[in-house]
Length: 227
Picture 1 (cartoon, rainbow, N blue to C red):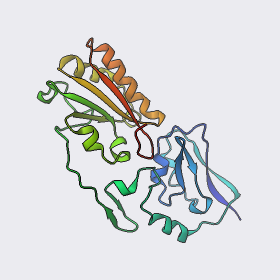
Picture 2: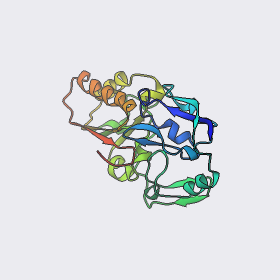
Picture 3: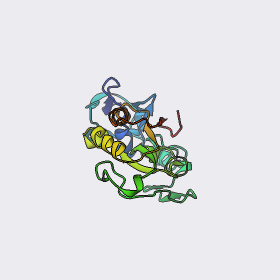
């Protein structure tokens, strides 16, 4: 049958995952860092994903496609293995509002300070003295299930998203590194291109701080693995 369905321009897609999260039917997934319409019969043609796309990569088109299959969508939503965004559902604490299921992980919070947003954190604070600094992209804690134990533990944590905040973090990070006794810096980012801004801002801050501070970049894949 011929009907309205979404079309994704992979050349414009920056891999931000926003459309996959917005698609309640699970029609969109991430393949090799790009959004992809996985099944025609999962797409209802309503376009909840369109306004979330920051690059205009998603449009409507009229073409031959399978009819929307509501029962297949409902069956897919009951699966716990993988969410549309690529996060591993069986390893995280997730509530699916359509089936009201909880999956628990036994893990305590390792967060040591507040606030944690780069925009909100003060430049001078006692917890920076002699600390190991973690600078993480917002999405990493959702994609990587054991984030607290493997990354936040024994670190002062700063989080941000240069794409959503629309700002260059390098000036503030430079001041934090320059004016405090930071022992090491670890950056955790997603594999998607929009996370590159966080990595570049940190590298520039390390250079401009005038200090030699050991640093490391860790990249998380959209299916929750360390690359």
